[in-house]
Image 1 (cartoon, protein in one colour):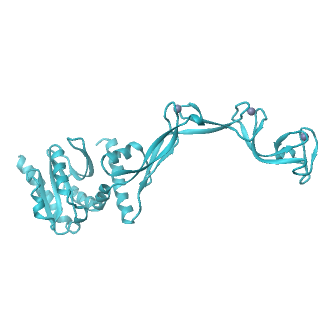
Image 2: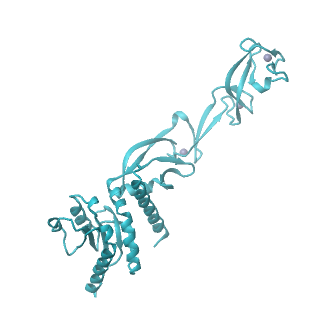
Image 3: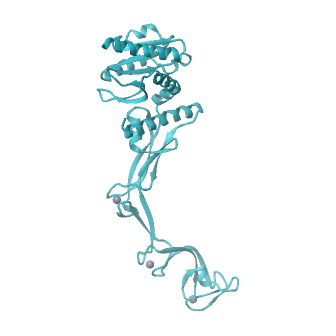
Length: 323
Ligand SMILES: [Zn+2]
Ligand SMILES: [Zn+2]
Ligand SMILES: [Zn+2]
């Protein structure tokens, strides 16, 4: 297994186990894009930051759906969304500026920070330009509030120049920014279904591994049609084995048809479907017995050992049939 594949598998497992836990607690799950400086748009996947490509992969597999969109400002030259904001002096363009509480001497018109006027006497100011004493606010001097002072050219101003730079150092004015939209995702019905069988799938896979069967859980397999499937238990081989588990609560009337299509679409595979004994026999006729083996148990959650035995038997028969 390549490390890339392993990494992607561990993210998948993390995703499904986290959905499982979140849904147990009845939590609403939403994935919102945000900007990570130096990286770009990322999504928080239950505590792990992943790229939008991972979310697109989940979207392609039907695990999440689009719930909305958020716009982010972007560079009009390269499309980068990692933008940095700078404030500059409107006179000389220097970014070496300070924010200060300002004071203006009405007589001579000099404006500077309050500190520049301070004397040792409380409430008495002296103008550093003309030397005049300032006593009465509103008559001798004014307090226009906060503003900026350029450390390079000493210009005092209230509205700085706003400059934006992307991480490729393109300099952009605010009015020139583009906006890029990114989707907000939420869980699909498909992922809610899959998460419901998360625990039972993991338990069965562990037991299969104990029996020497290399079972991969929630494998991402692409069919001949290009459709992606998330297969609960997958055993690679010739043919590969697709194990689907369908407790009553995830079953609907489309289920038999969807499984039939999946069984045909995944090349060189046979499918085992584990069904509750309540599954209606008349619906079973759709399954091609050459391609799909049915295992029925009274209660899927309480019959793990029985299920594992039956899977091992099917695999055994398959090997026997080949030799
Ligand atoms: Zn750029
Ligand atoms: Zn300046
Ligand atoms: Zn003055």
